Length: 67
Image (cartoon, rainbow, N blue to C red):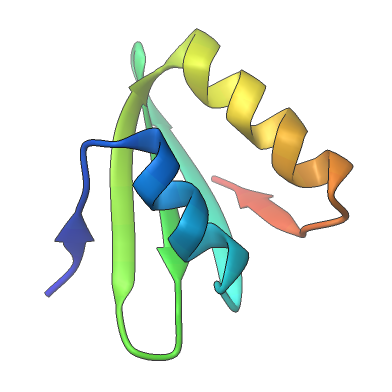
């Protein structure tokens, strides 16, 4: 089962250790998924907050797959 977190800072820690990062947009809500070796960690954000976080990850050279 996926782990859903509420804190962006907590999700960033998982994203730093993630093997893969995926983005799924549904209406005004964006779901970010970080696949680590042990678990799938998700967070739901507004579109503006998610876009800012996605740009930050891409700036660090992380691969982000958008669906």
